[in-house]
Image (cartoon, rainbow, N blue to C red; front, top):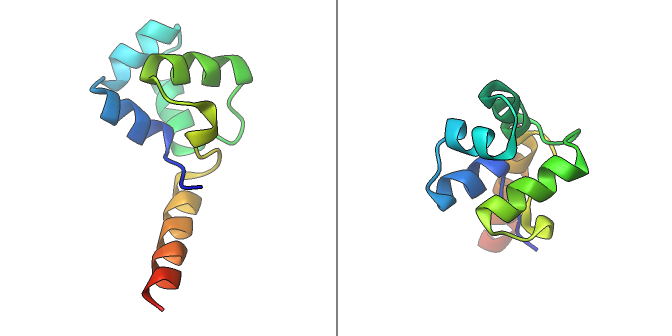
Length: 81
Protein backbone atom coordinates (compact mmCIF):
# COMPACT_ATOMS: atom_id res chain seq x y z
CA UNK A 1 0.00 0.00 0.00
CA UNK A 2 1.22 3.48 -0.83
CA UNK A 3 1.55 5.88 2.11
CA UNK A 4 1.98 9.62 2.36
CA UNK A 5 3.82 11.87 4.78
CA UNK A 6 2.15 13.99 7.43
CA UNK A 7 3.20 17.07 5.46
CA UNK A 8 1.53 15.76 2.30
CA UNK A 9 -1.64 15.00 4.25
CA UNK A 10 -1.64 18.52 5.68
CA UNK A 11 -0.98 20.21 2.34
CA UNK A 12 -3.66 18.09 0.64
CA UNK A 13 -6.12 19.22 3.30
CA UNK A 14 -5.36 22.86 2.46
CA UNK A 15 -4.05 23.80 5.89
CA UNK A 16 -0.95 25.69 6.93
CA UNK A 17 1.36 24.22 9.52
CA UNK A 18 0.32 26.89 12.02
CA UNK A 19 -3.39 26.21 11.48
CA UNK A 20 -2.93 22.47 11.92
CA UNK A 21 -0.74 22.84 14.99
CA UNK A 22 -3.14 25.23 16.66
CA UNK A 23 -6.11 22.97 15.95
CA UNK A 24 -4.49 19.89 17.53
CA UNK A 25 -2.89 21.84 20.39
CA UNK A 26 0.84 21.69 19.64
CA UNK A 27 3.42 24.31 18.66
CA UNK A 28 4.00 24.64 14.92
CA UNK A 29 7.68 23.78 15.39
CA UNK A 30 6.67 20.52 17.08
CA UNK A 31 4.44 19.66 14.14
CA UNK A 32 7.23 20.57 11.73
CA UNK A 33 9.54 18.16 13.56
CA UNK A 34 7.01 15.35 13.18
CA UNK A 35 6.51 16.16 9.51
CA UNK A 36 10.25 15.55 9.01
CA UNK A 37 10.42 12.46 11.23
CA UNK A 38 7.19 10.91 12.44
CA UNK A 39 8.79 7.76 13.81
CA UNK A 40 8.23 8.80 17.44
CA UNK A 41 4.89 10.63 17.16
CA UNK A 42 2.41 9.80 19.91
CA UNK A 43 -0.63 7.74 18.97
CA UNK A 44 -2.96 10.42 20.30
CA UNK A 45 -1.38 13.18 18.19
CA UNK A 46 -1.40 10.95 15.11
CA UNK A 47 -5.11 10.27 15.68
CA UNK A 48 -5.86 13.99 16.02
CA UNK A 49 -3.96 14.80 12.83
CA UNK A 50 -5.59 12.01 10.85
CA UNK A 51 -9.03 13.15 12.00
CA UNK A 52 -8.16 16.73 11.08
CA UNK A 53 -6.84 15.77 7.64
CA UNK A 54 -9.63 13.22 7.14
CA UNK A 55 -7.27 10.39 6.27
CA UNK A 56 -6.95 6.89 7.77
CA UNK A 57 -3.94 6.34 10.01
CA UNK A 58 -2.88 3.40 7.85
CA UNK A 59 -2.21 5.82 4.98
CA UNK A 60 0.42 7.79 6.91
CA UNK A 61 4.08 6.89 6.51
CA UNK A 62 5.71 6.74 9.94
CA UNK A 63 9.40 7.43 9.69
CA UNK A 64 11.90 9.92 8.37
CA UNK A 65 11.00 12.00 5.35
CA UNK A 66 14.08 10.89 3.41
CA UNK A 67 13.16 7.23 4.02
CA UNK A 68 9.79 7.86 2.38
CA UNK A 69 11.49 9.51 -0.60
CA UNK A 70 13.87 6.56 -0.93
CA UNK A 71 10.96 4.12 -0.74
CA UNK A 72 9.06 5.96 -3.47
CA UNK A 73 12.14 6.04 -5.72
CA UNK A 74 12.68 2.31 -5.22
CA UNK A 75 9.06 1.55 -6.10
CA UNK A 76 9.30 3.69 -9.26
CA UNK A 77 12.40 1.81 -10.39
CA UNK A 78 10.63 -1.52 -9.86
CA UNK A 79 7.71 -0.37 -12.02
CA UNK A 80 10.04 0.74 -14.83
CA UNK A 81 11.53 -2.74 -15.17
